[in-house]
Length: 469
Image 1 (tube, rainbow, N blue to C red):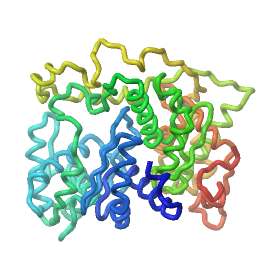
Image 2: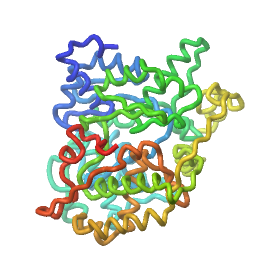
Image 3: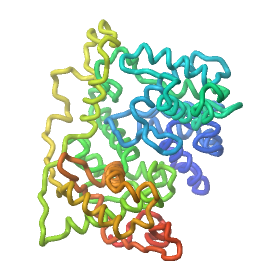
Image 4: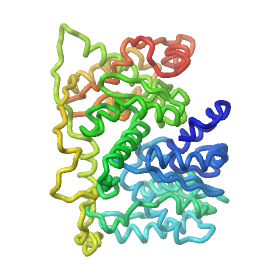
């Protein structure tokens, strides 16, 4: 591994480059910032070899782009696309984004927003249940959000005009964009032809096909390392029986620490990498803003409730894996008419690369069913309402009048952080939430728009929020 061979004075710079490429997967001249691409290019050779050795990832670096092609072991709904205003993409925006990339792949060096909209509208008309009508403001807004996503990543650069003006009135407004073709081509590179797949699971990695024990052991090690850098917390029950002993090996975790510069926090239930740099995590927590602040308050209240021996909670086995539920939803949306049946049916192996009726090593041992405290939905609603009654004057205006919406968003945040898991009648409390028990809250009286002092003042300079644990 190159990290061990790099001079100590340059190691921090190399680890910063590793965090940037792992966090973004696509780096361009302007995304995520203007210093990222030169940093990646500086360490391209070392990064390429270490990413392949540790994770099985492939890195391509050109003058204008750096693109890592990850191997996905499990579906994860925790990293959705977002608008420039940080709103989650819905189905329509995802569809417009995909069709925009297809249209740009056939375009020249420039395109107007109205021309791109016409092409996407033509494509959308061929998809059952999808339409882009420029006469509807909601369609225009969704389309502009998709274009904004591409612009933020450097696939498009505004040369003239204003997308907002077009969204308000397409007859009066217009925008002209330069197209960065290498970025467009780097954005969508699926590992397999989508027309050959009956299931989204076919986009996941295949199991190792080697027969030697050393080959299988190396594959297991890479899978565990991938999980460590892709998830905020890795619980033992997230892993297959074959992977769990690997997570306990000091060398596996040390390799990831050396490569990323992060520190691992080990507990009996699993491992979390603590990112004090803020360059690997897509969510900083604790953080500023109403959602993060209320999330921390709610986490503290939940931790206290779990520890209340006078009112014991029900304990329940874990909910079905969220990735499996997501896979079922996505598979249900695949129109069978688009699947190229001859190739799909003639495949000797299923989408995971194993015989459909065979039993893999990972299934040879039944997983241990763990139980977790259950917090009822009514208690969560009442607690957030009580927090709003106490601190509501310091909340952002949009949440002061929408406590139910605030509750939904805060719970979603805690679930993305893998602190809770949603079930039909409440929340299962996951072990990592305990690190936020006893958090100290300070309300500034001179600046009522703020709920907390800075993270450094309240939680310590590392920003990990561990004070009071």
